[in-house]
Every structure is written in structure tokens, then in C-alpha cells.
Amino acid sequence: MEHRILVYGGLGNVASERIIPSLELLRSQFSIEYAIVDLNDTGPGTYYKYDTEPILKYNTAIIATPNNTHSLIAIKALDSGLNVLCEKPLAHTIDSADQMLAASKAHPRLIAMLSDHYVYKPSVRHIIYNWKKYHQEIGPITNIKAIVFEQELQKGRDWLFSREVAGGGIAMDTGFHIVSIMGKLFEFKNLTVTGAKITRCPQAPGDAETYACITLATHRAPIHIEVGKWMGKVEKEIIFKGQGATLEANIGSGEVLLNGKIDRPPTVDDCYPNLLKELLSSIEQQRTPWTTFEEGYKALQIIKTAYKIAEYNYKACYTSK
Figure 1 (tube, rainbow, N blue to C red):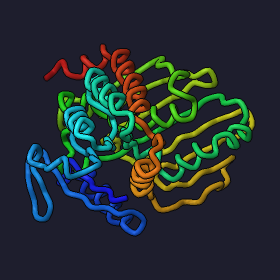
Figure 2 (spheres, rainbow, N blue to C red):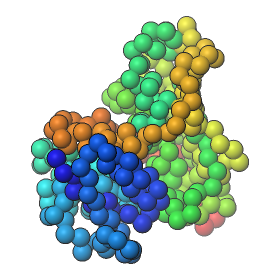
Figure 3 (cartoon, one colour):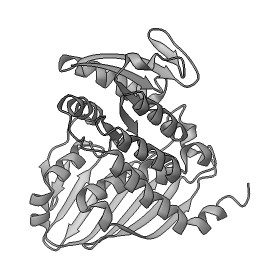
């Protein structure tokens, strides 16, 4: 099968540095032709400015544009008969996500896949795939702690901290990843938001939060999530503490530790090649992909609930603006 792909947002960081190199890598396994579509600019080679692309000549759309454009592009692509892979979060608002989900259900033969690359990170993927075994080893879970602290933004990604464009800040960006992982492990219907706080680094661009603390409850254990930018350090890990053992996932290195001993060694991060392989395989096999629009919608509902709980603090962050 020939995969004729439009990569929306092709001049941006995610598309140019992650998606396109991964598509090139997968040419040895799949028949791939792609063109790049950007919302504002054109470039050398096969580039189109949005709304000039010959969409009917293609069969798949990959959306790596700012959050507030996801629904417009996804619905247009689905209605034009294209399979869709959309970067997380699914949309910047619940209403836009509703529209995307409705469009995907109106075209059940098309693939509507969520691109949530943390779910495909080596250590995370390993734990999800082997969760039944690990759960037996660690026993009843007493608590879970997830921390993802990073430093400054990469150049050109200031829009991630615009509430109007992104729908929020670090909770919509990195917090969404962690909620998605917990949804995979425990099912979204078993996750309840019990608390949320957000703050902002005054040196950051935009007007959204740069630190978020979200607490969830499952029927098994409390989950404590902390995500932040401009933290002065880099830390990316999830720790599952049980009555019998402790399981640690180093999101950055890919290492997995069980009771402090290496159970899976560090490895090269292959999340985007694996993610795109899942997209192309799902299209060829006409099966449901591992990460879906439905899951993206459920994760967004949880994140938006966290924002409502943190609303007082959220507004207080901006009283000086």
C-alpha cells in the first residue's frame, strides 16, 4: 500500500525534527510519499501553504500544528477521506474535541489516531505492555508519583504557553501525557481528579501556567503528578510503590528499575518511529490503533477538570497582568 501523507505544521519543531526524520526511517518498511503543509509559510521542496494543498491526492494527514487548529484540520481531512494522526492534546477545548470525535465516528473506516509520544517512550511502553506481570510483582499499589521537570522551551514553541492557542500551559502539554499513561494502565473511567494547583514562572513567555500539580485517585491508589518548565533541573520518572516492590520508569533514558535493580536497561528513544509505524500498520491492517481519538478525548476531560479545580489559583496567577 502506498501511504500518501500530508504533514501539517511541517516547518515546526515536532514535524521537522521528529515526524519527517521518522518517516524517512520507515521508508524501508513502508511505501511512503509525503508533502509538507504549513499554516503560514512555504519552503523548498514539496511544501504547501494551508488551504492550497491538493488534499484529495493524499490518503493520510499528520497534524503537528498548534492546539487551536487541530479540530479544523482534522475534520477537513476526515471529511476528505483521509486517515488522521493528531498530536496531543486532541484539541484546545472540549467543544473542539467533541467535533473531532464526532467527525471520526462519522467515518468509521478511517483511522483516527492520537499522537501521544510519551505512551510510546521505551520505558513507558515496556511497563504498559508488561503491566500484568509487574502488577503481580509489586503487589497492591500504595501510591504512584510522576514527575516531569524540564528547562526552557525550544525556540519557536512559545505558543505552548498561550492559553488562547494551547488551551492552557504545562498541564495541557506534559500533564496530558501522564494522564494518558495512567488511563492506559487503569482505564480512564477509574481516574478521578481530587486536587490541582498551578503556578507560573514570571520569566516564561505567554500567559499560561508553567508548573502544575494534579492528584488523581483510582480504586487502587492515589496518583501524584507534577509537571513543570523553567524548573532549573531535568527529571522525568514515574514511580509505582506497592506493598511488595517498587517499580520505576525513567522516561528520559528508557530504563526500568524493579526494587532498585535494572529490569530494562537504558535505550535509544524510538518513540516517534514506533508511533508512526503503528499509524501505518493500523491503516494497512484496518484495525484500531493503540492510541485513539477516544482516549485523547477522555484524557482532555480529566485535564480540563483539573483546570476547573485549580481555577482560583489559575486566575490568581494573572492578577498582575
